[in-house]
Image (cartoon, rainbow, N blue to C red; front, top):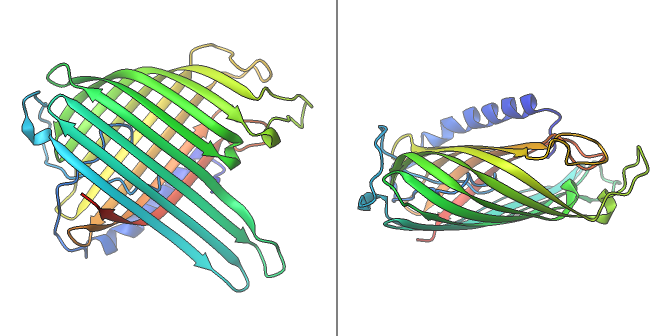
Length: 307
């Protein structure tokens, strides 16, 4: 779904989370150890899960309480028929392994939807994207880590056949426990785009954009995962990417910057099942011609802990 402004998206997220609180409080308070990934916040389809302890303790390298192995999968969907027809599917699988000073995480996600505005109106695709990410962290100090992250995205409605991001950097963990994390990141981002042919033409000027584009960015990220109680967890992450060249786009002469924000509220309904209400916002101040600057995705998914 596309939003018209970042403000509208923020209010939509707040209403979504508030509406989810009441049923979540009825969840069975049985909670298996399930920390969220140390990498950036999951996509909206992820139903990010975590557990927590309160307090602002600093992590230590020999703190075995930070070790963890998690594997889960989530899926959700909507089907409507009759005067209006629509179908949407969302799914994600995540993996995290932490052993001492080493940590590895990976995820893969997909969102797809089709809809028709009336009985005699053809059904068309309205959402279509695939995404994946892998990351390695090395904790070389008491609460500091170096990391390398690679992610890929294919999104029809952002005009992308591929968006590849390579992100080396450093992370500082104010809290680094098995069930509670607060951290910040700083680093470099290399972005390589392969554009869809249908999105390359600027109808306003008649210019044909290049098939590929490379951007160099500085990257800042802040993340927080916490268990509100034995059954409910909250996770959020905010990422800012700033183009390092003042005018990287020769056609529009715009400074390039992007903001990504993800938030999730998850409730356990059994030892292996949880319900996740999630929201994701992606804002690009210089998108391809004719595309909105802000995209949002909201989802409710059933999460299964496989390990």
